[in-house]
Image (tube, rainbow, N blue to C red; front, side):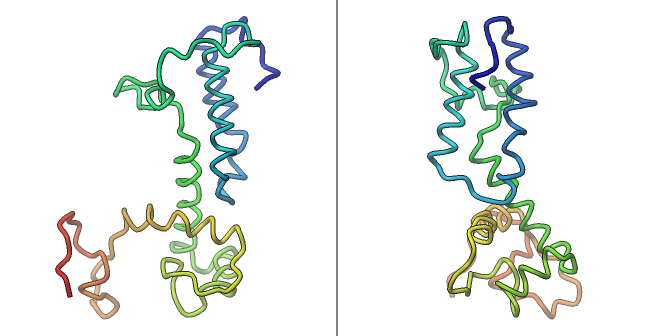
Length: 174
């Protein structure tokens, strides 16, 4: 982003540049690995400084918190992506691919290495999981939050453990 001359760009031009280029550049890496918090903070800082700078050389005055700019446009923000949340969403997509396409090469490789007799949603049982696998399963809470089982014949559902009723009420203690 340092090479972009923001001196001649309007706020609209900067918005388009940030959303189209800056957000998509690290997308492949973010879909495979959890980026360390320090890196996501530096990326956010670089994008924020680019947004607020006037001449491309100085940081500029930050008139509003970056989190507020990352809100949806209907909520008063500009719709910029929170890099850490976007990273989690891309990893959740990979985890969903493991669940939804169990016969794909991607799923068969991971199943053979990490979850032979279980599912990708079960706890890690490997002694030396790769950083890629750890990254993918770090998105497990996001997937489980939106996951619900279809009841079919009912033979594979545990009434107390599986999410099969869409409700936010707490489960009874056992």
